[in-house]
Image (tube, rainbow, N blue to C red):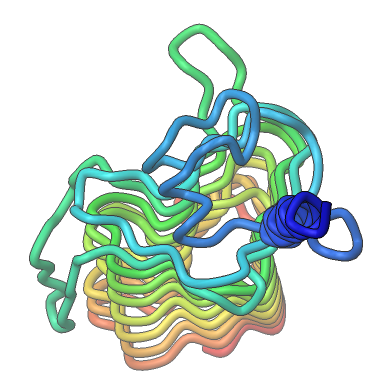
Length: 278
């Protein structure tokens, strides 16, 4: 009987440990390298990468995730209303990039750090938030999420073969993009408090959007581009071509741009300009 009780206790202990490895005390689903290898983070998740998040809810990294090659995506989100907290950890690929101009071991490969894109003809997941960590060394994009209401906050996307952070009708806040090898390194509708350095292009704001209090420097081509949008209190210095480019109609107010390759601030029509330097 003692043996049976001991075995039962052991089974209960193992189950408890497994539960602790999957769920945090607050009910958030935890993801680490072991969970990625095992699968079943959600019902649709199979062993290995990508980790597929197919159920709405909150998820958090509990350790770094390392993908094996530049063609592999780390996390794919296929459903609306997901929060992914990187928890201060990193999603890490094998890519290495160097500046001036940016050159990477892999450029334009298929692997994405965090992906939330619908298949052809299907809307991308809405209301997806990624926050608090680093995505580096991916073969393609660091973060690519094209649904409405997407948010990327406090994410450092560095040394990727494609753009660093791209969202659709959404926001990028207090984030850093550097050493990303193709396209605009940071794309969003609202871009606030971000830094873009040593990329090909720096920051692109979608039509009707706002760029406020951002810094773009030492990008090979342009610093900040706003397309029929508002740019306020940004700084763009030492970019290879232009500092700030406004596609009119739009508003450029209180921006600073110096020492850019061809022109500091340019527009292509009747934009509203005030208190820019120069």
